[in-house]
Length: 318
Image (cartoon, rainbow, N blue to C red; front, side, top):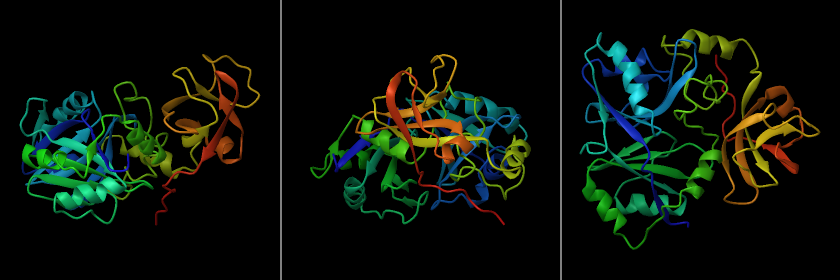
C-alpha cells in the first residue's frame, strides 16, 4: 500500500513545561537537550544508575513546551522516575492520558504517502532525519532509516480529519509493513518487558544517535561512557534475515548447535514475517557475527539466518 497512512495509536506522551525544562532534562536524559528546537526533535534514552535503559523516547518542542513520546506502557514509569528529581527544578510533568485534549495523535507515512500527506497539509518534508516542519495544527517529523518516512503529530483534530478525508490517501490499520521498516532501520523501542534489561550499547543506542557523548552528566552517564570508550562491544544488536518463518519460541543459535531452545541462543527482540525473507533483530556476540559465523533458528534446524547491514554506522568522535 504505497499511499497508505498508518494510525500509530499505541504511543504514550508526557508534557514537560516550565522555565527549567531543558536544563532539567539535560541532567536526566542521554540526548543533548540544548540541541532541541521547534525545528529539530531528539531521540534518547532514560537510564538507571547502573546504566541500563529504563525507556527510549522522542522529544518535540512546540509552543515553549516539550512533548515526550514513548512506547505503550512506559509513560507512567518515565513520569515516576523523572518526578523524583523534578522537585528541585522549575518544571512541571504531566502524563497525557487518552482523555486529554492536548495528547497528540500520530499518523505514520512512508515513501509515496509522505509526499502526498505533506502536500495536503501544505507543509514541507524536512530534509534530514529528526528535523521538524511545524504547521498550525500539526508537526511533521522525518524519521531515520533507509526508507523515506515521517510521523505526523496532530495537536488539533481538524487537520487530521481533513487529511483522512482525502481521496488521495488510504488508511491502513495493518501495521506489519510499518513494523518491518522499523526493523530494517535497526530500531528497538523499550517496552515494559525490556525496561532495565539492556544497556544502550546492546541496543545500538550509542551508534544510532540516541546517546550524545559530548554533553554533560546525566543519570547512568559514567557507566554508559565507560562501556563505549573502553573498546569494541562484546555484544550488539544485529539485523538479520531468515530463510524460515520466525516463531515466538525462536532464538538465534550457531549452525551445528544441539543445545536446547531454553538454555541457548540469543533472544529475538523484534521480527517480521510479513515478506520473504523474514527479518529479525537480535543481540549477538559481535566478534562472531562480524566474522561470518553461520546461524539458524533454534526451533528450525534447516533454517539459515544471515546477518545484514544496518543503515547506521559506528560514529567517530574527536
